[in-house]
Image (cartoon, rainbow, N blue to C red; front, side):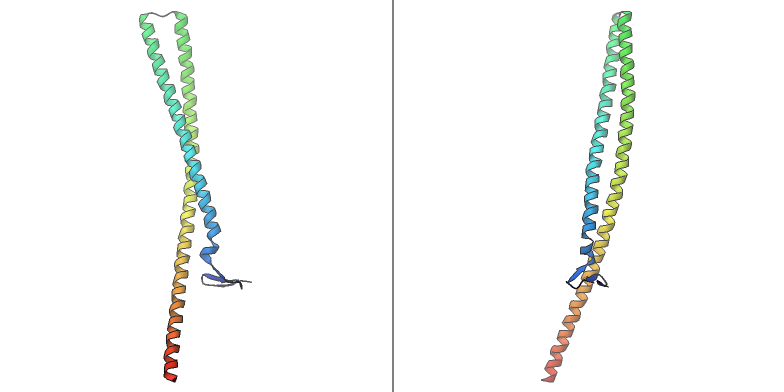
Length: 163
């Protein structure tokens, strides 16, 4: 059974400090955060692609409306006018649907951003704990080294006095 003292666990086979024991957890949260960052970037690309497609549809509808206005100014047959109107109606519906796609992908991206931010907070918290433990452990080592140096100095002085 391990004996726990401040910062260091003695397992009988050597010692392992708390910061090193936390390394697998730190690696896991780092990996998770990186994967979520990659996923967030992919979501952002999907939003941009959806917005670009929406812009193209809107631009195309505007061009088509201009063509209709030009043709109507020169005179247009009733069937051609009806065909233009049907096509414009379909374009308007496609635009409405694409607006839904943009909203849905933006919502998915926002949810992914929240997941990534939470993972980033976990990484920061674990890093903070590891840094604190490392500082604490270094302080303990420094005190031990100083104590050993002091004891060695006292022994040397004692030995010199006994000679």
